[in-house]
Image (cartoon, rainbow, N blue to C red; front, side, top):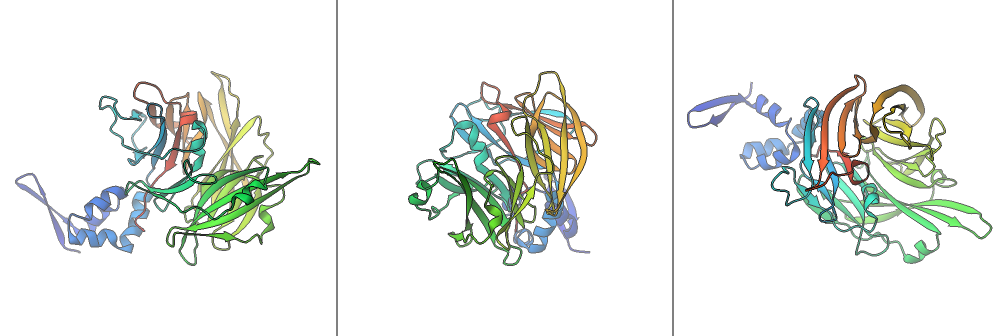
Length: 402
């Protein structure tokens, strides 16, 4: 049994906890609190900084359902990222989240204001990826050359770092008829290096209507703060593939995933081998009629939701579900629902739970195995309701001590 720690409550009461209990309590707290608690004592600083505690924290706090919000403040016309995490543990309680200052003190949540972006308002939320290892990446920052700048944000430390420009010449960009950029995080399992992958999808449209597509890959090292180009030695990323939306990374960072513009192929980048793996979607969904949303689940699987793009008010809807294990086999899961007034799944996936949009302003944490609403967040601005379908994005967030 370890030594007891003395904690004084008020002027008279003193409670003693064993070192094991103190460590257990601390391992269940959010990362931003632990950074502050390092200053409590030398022993706490040593404990919180140790690799064994980081592993314990990942197992305990890492299993909690916490997320941060990216939201558009219509008063300032700026996108903002919360550095307060939002929980989902309490039962179906309605919580109002106010985005923006000057609201008479109604908002307890605090948000980091992001730099001005190049894209239109509703597309900016697609330019945010992560979190991974506590970092969130956003790209397309205005005022920088080419396709705009890239930055890494750490909500725990409340810091934002603008990355050096990737060395791609304007000549390379001009040769293509159309080019789009996407990003993905990962971890090399051998070198333990965190990698930020940039994909540039090129579309060449010739006069004879012949179309060719290709993908350029560059990798940024947050440790060395340098870019390097990945040579085009892998044909899995070529032919009829055009990367459109980022799916996210496996929990262990071994792969980062994207879906193509036709909702027909999942592209997965192997962070150790630095090659793509192509996996066809299990069933052909007409992308004009159905929308596909895919979430990374743990370190071995992806879960796909398919739902109608056009919905009639007052009608219930069922979502198709598929699970991809090991990038090899799709398994059809039971359909979930019925959903009334639900637009689409928008947030992180935990076991049988997902965050969906209800109506226009409400984020609903929903357990589809029991069809039970766990919690509801009503999104508001200072004097307006916030459209969750276009102006809010949910990011699962645990932070990292590693």
